[in-house]
Length: 357
Image (cartoon, rainbow, N blue to C red; front, side, top):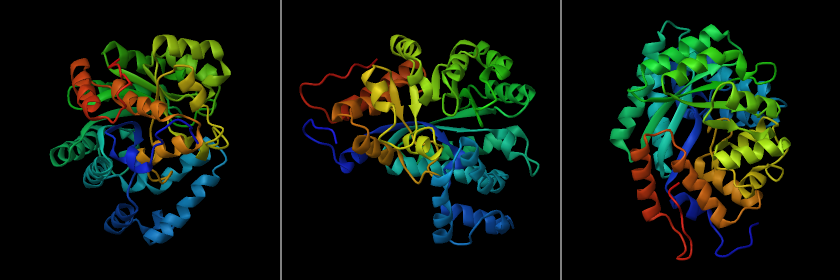
C-alpha cells in the first residue's frame, strides 16, 4: 500500500471527475440488458444462463482465460445481441449512463461496426444507432462522449479500409479516431497499413491495441508503420527500455486496462503489472476498463485496484486520472477547457501543481 499521507479511499476516487479512453461497447453491456435483448430478439440460446445471477456466475470464468484469444471468445455472448439499431442505441446509452453515474465526465467508446451487420444492418445504420445513443446520453447526463471505430486484426485489410473510410465519413459527426483490435499474435499492425494511412491522411486520431499479447515489435509497428498517437495496453513495452524512453520523451500515452490485462494473461497479477514502472519512468499512463462487463469493473474500481496493488502514491493516482483528460481525442481548445474545469475541482494539496500539458 502506498505510504504517503493522506491515503486515498475508494470514496475519494469515486468523487473525482474521471475520463475513460479505452472501453469496448460490446464488452460493457448490463447483464439485465443482455437477458432482455435475448428475450426480445428470440436469441435465448445465445446466452449460457437465463438469469442475472446465472450469467454473473458464468462470466466469472473469464478470469480463467489462458490467452487473449480465449478472452475474446467471450464476446460470443454479446455481439449476437447487438444486431439491431434499437439494441445498439440502448447499449451505447446505458454505457454512457453507467459512466456518468460514477462521475466519468468524458467517455470514448470503441467498437467495430462490421461485427454488427449480421442481421442486415448497414455499417452506417449501425454507426448511426450508436451515435444516437451516445448523443441522447449527453443530453440526459453530465458527460461528453466520442466514438472510435476499430479495424480487426484477423480480417483482410480491405475490411479495415472500409472501416477507416467509414470513420473518415463520420469524423465531424462524433467519430474521433481509428483503432485496430482483435487477436494480436500473428496479426501485425503493418498488415493494415493502408487503412491507417487513409485515416491519418484524413486527419483522424489513431490508437492501436499493441503489446498486449505480443512483444515490443508490435508496439513499434503501431507507432512507426501506422502512426499511432496512443497505444492500447502496451504491456510488453517494458521489454524495450530504449522504446520506453521514446514514449517518455515524446509523451505517447498508454491506455492501461489493469484487470483486463490480468484476465488476458498479459500479466499474472495486478502486483506484477508494469504500470508502476511506466509511471515512474515518466510515461503518460491512463487507467481504463477495457470491458466493464467481462472484467466486472468500472473506472473507479480500476483506479482503486491500481492504488491498492501497484505501489503508486496518491499523487501518482491523481496524475493518472488527469491524464485521461490530457490525452483525450478532442480538439485542443475543448480539451483544455474540460481539463481546466477538472483541475478547478480536483482535490489537491496546496503544495501540488498540475500542469495542463
